[in-house]
Length: 146
Image (tube, rainbow, N blue to C red):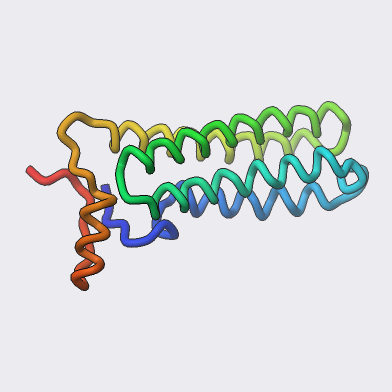
């Protein structure tokens, strides 16, 4: 695992940010923009992915981080489901659906990988370790020490 000093360094968060930008852009166009319920819900769900990654990272333990990652993963499923609704209603083209569904699925897999890494038996509680190191002015390499 690469060194991560802040949530912005997490690749899944970076991709979730891009997803949110794309979702909000596509949902502000044409008939989609007039379906206020779906538009707001899909935007909120995409924001939830990146927000829960960030909030979990800023918590004090791996256990809490994992909990928030599961919430982010759930939100990625919500976005995928809502993309199907948008496609079925004719709000987005198949090419947009394919691109966005692939991106959100990739984010979901990345979150699963991070959960697996954090859940390993004997893994250090690197969130707390990171906090102590930053407080002391050091950066942390979160790879499991041998």
